[in-house]
Image 1 (cartoon, rainbow, N blue to C red):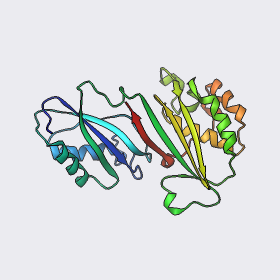
Image 2: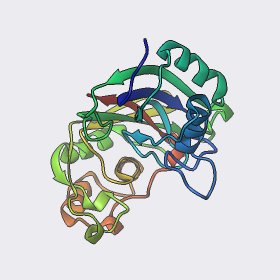
Image 3: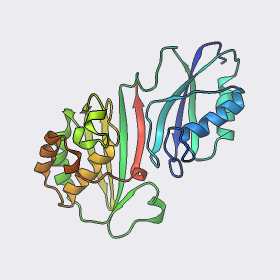
Length: 251
């Protein structure tokens, strides 16, 4: 298949965020966006501007990130483009799909929901292979208390207490959480959070707060109080970035 002037090229990508300063280009060091742009520009011989479904933070991983760019005056086989991208990109980034979308499609504005998964290693030690993809939390954790506390977070709420952006700098801190699920297998705990949109570091702050409940630093009743307070200082720690993966973007 080829694409013509004005076509909206959409890429589905996955990446290991270790060693990258997040999605967005930055002068601080390598980014996913910058690395992908360099390869696309090499293939297309033109400047490329990318838009992404989620601006993941430094160290955050993705199994399903969606990005787009507009292509003009080109006639390139999409199958060959997919092959070329994966040959030239570092092995920390993979393009899983290349397709054409309607001209008005925007990967962030058109997204209906996102699924994030956070991985935690419990116990006195962490397997070395997990160190880049799971937070080592070496405390006894009451998962049932975490589940009960999470019920206060489901639905449309003001999540100002769970964002690292000052309340005065954002116009709306109302978001909706449709699902929080916990899955514990031996010393591994996985938390899935799903919703239409998320605030800056909202997922990591929710995970940190729920783990504080799990280890007894906060009571399950306090989670609802923190939510109502809109005060970030009352919530738990921000969970480390490397335990978080953007698993799916829904359209």
